[in-house]
Length: 208
Image (tube, rainbow, N blue to C red; front, side, top):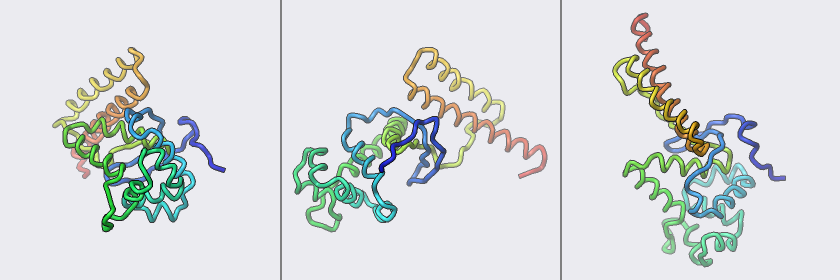
């Protein structure tokens, strides 16, 4: 029997790594719901039934599309993408094949890359959170947090605007997802302060 994701307050934190981000399990509402909405639910079903071997062996996007076709059937993909059998086969074929064409996952990757280059990282983050919510997860930066101010005092002052912004959003009854995003920004700022203080304290006590 396929189990659905539990409510957010009952989920356990489970970290796993992607190319540039870690993903953890918090509930979210994304902004990407109008792009391939049926595909999102279909991939949820695919992820719930796919064997461990499938997950490990599917690396490239065309391999993931092939897994989706095997789990859902070619006709289901035809309905989702409004494309014929030939086009679906092209999506699932290896790049060495003459019939290979860029698949929807490739196109979303290009979209996200272009957005990042244009300074739209928050759009990408919100979009990926929308996808990740299907399996009860959420993205987080992998990179080490680095303070961006010269002193602990400046880092402390840097925390307030983000916290105040979050409080104002709550007072204005903003959407919970917007508040969560701002809360994550606030947490990042606070951790910069903590790390700055740890470094300062270590120097005072001759500790590295």
